Image (cartoon, rainbow over all chains, first blue to last red; front, side, top):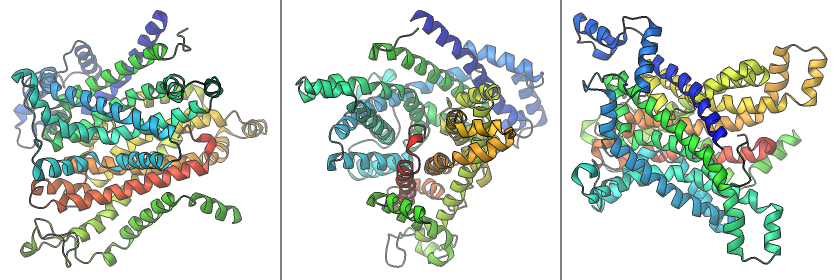
Length: 315
Length: 280
């Protein structure tokens, strides 16, 4: 187990190195002088030159890369052009909203996706199965922003039950009631992503249901609920767990749109604003943090297989 | 001919697939015949008729400039279908070549697929946004940015399929006959991967449409004056309380188009090549 963990940790190094090269090259791929592009057309040559010096753009490209990567791995992602403050502190100030949205959305996705997928598989080829598959297909086809806007029209504008935008910090105010601001964004984000989990749970349940040991369990006279939970579900859940990394990435992609629709001060909306402001250090910084998170989640997912399925060994 | 007929008959045996195909045909016809179908000029500003509810003269109402929403949606279908096909062509051409080369040449595969795996660790929309920040707004740039995101998925699938197929007896026979690598790749391997690639292309179209609409909605996609469905939604946000139909109809057409591609793709996957089902 420890040897496997160590070997798996080693594989992270080339992944992060290649990811760093891609992220670093974002700024240098744009046509023209990055400093001039970031400052806009109104900037004076002096201002452009000052930014070039400040960002080290006058130095050879490999020195710039080594400086950036050394800083990135110790949490120094450079300075935001717009905020005039370290990128890491800008990300930190926006992290609460995004973490809470991702966390609650993931809970919603699992509490909707897994049971619906299980029921759909158990009631295979019945109207209930067709209904849930239809729901999954529809949910996967709805643009997140459109769903968000419609929920806003229904629950905020027409019914007035929930707030339509913003999110006062729970940590700063200590008021848990502020979480109601996240109900609509979480529903918006969870709906399309739960579609994947529904389909995945259903198909892996159906695969396991045709196994010989399931027939044996039934032949032994076990109760159907026991067969479904202990024999089918436990073996089927591993493919759902393997999709958690992918779901996490989809969630983060979704936060970009959802946070913009609901005007939430999160990391997703920060990326959009930074693209519009041409604040490249922030774009690079956010994507770097997200890739690290994804790599770590995939690592944890791989390590969890052994706990979920004792047949899996880490030799 | 007989096989072709049987294939389509089996494909459309499920009513839901037929529905998907009908919706898809409707959207494509709408895009092709936009000048005939649209009752008004989609760009014509008419301040007297601004923000009208859906009515008999304007079926889907009018926007804040008095422009007919139905006509704009019909013309918007052109942009969506055109850009969707653009992304599919871009991602299939580059994805298949990269995936097939990586699968066929082991040494090359290690580097290309490692790189592609890393790119797949980036959230698709964030990557597309970063690419748009580099490329700037515009239809072609949107196609490149979204196409670059989705070519990684096509390359991954093609890679897996090539690894599987290159061990088949007919490839060994071609090697024994002295066929060149180029001939084996382009005449023997890639044509045999067409079925799963077509299936993947339908899903790419659906995902790409959602992604492109999101980029337009965020204001970094196609320039705002072009009536794409995403742009229409983006400019309507401020009228959410006064004119909710401005939001409802363009979004509905995105849903219909994506849903039709998903339904059709699902049925194609089940019918075209069941042995590759797990890979697509």
